[in-house]
Length: 218
Image (cartoon, rainbow, N blue to C red; front, side, top):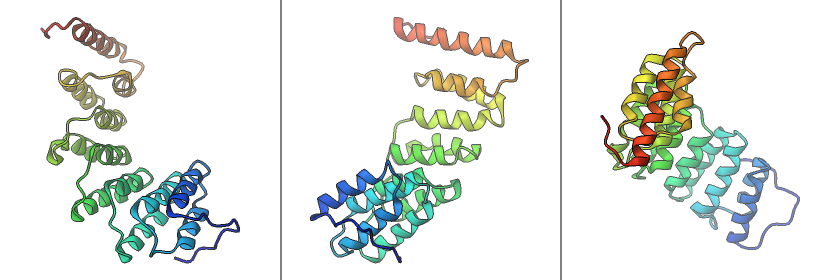
């Protein structure tokens, strides 16, 4: 990976490098981040430092450079962590996000809730994938995630309002849905569907009252 070196003086330790990389993320200075890795040299790098550089690439929307860095990590025997894949997925297009999730499993990196939820968000433009992943968290011994289901609801709302409403009704008995869940579902309604919107609000209000009172559902 050919990268121009930054003009600033290099930090003195690996920890200093990692802190410097973290400070670059809000500024999205991905070229500087990759150049800092090159300054330190692969023999000195660890996965934490590489993850910090990946975070800068993700923030800058440079997912291809992130994938290149992942490949370079493998060439230099730096084992990626679940944080590595979560960071990469967050800035990748949906096809790459799915490939990264599969790659994590192939490398015996057990997906956690953050990685799966990040993947669901990345594939939200493809509702079948978003829904499948949200409903498959048990395969990784993970509890159902409201964040994942909200992303799936948003994906469904863009295509199939009836299915989004059905999923919302199903989830309302299993999870404590929030305003994001309600808003994502209602966004699928046309202006003429005011009655469905009122019914959804009534269902949400009733469910909240039952939860606060500790009463069973009818």
